[in-house]
Image 1 (tube, rainbow, N blue to C red):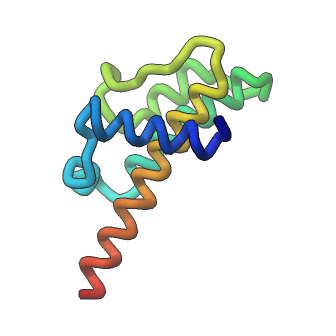
Image 2: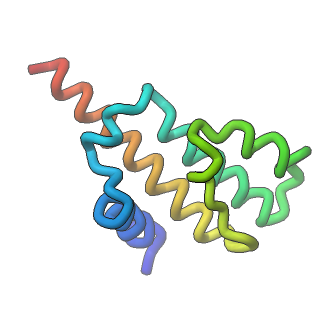
Length: 104
């Protein structure tokens, strides 16, 4: 599968299994889903060897939700990036819905 296909599959899993639907996503503050995606992306960068100071201390503290929802995958940067991409896609969708409802 391509990266885009993996992200789409993960986003569908979030909707179907975790029930993180559009209605659920719309309840979040602007940018929070993107922030969560960023945390996973930074973790992937660290796993790939990027020198990130205090990676385990700094970035989990940037996680915008309860820590029970932070589920990094040990030593699997592709999985981290898939999670990041799905969260960022959810933020894009949320922003597009908000723009549509404002323009109506």
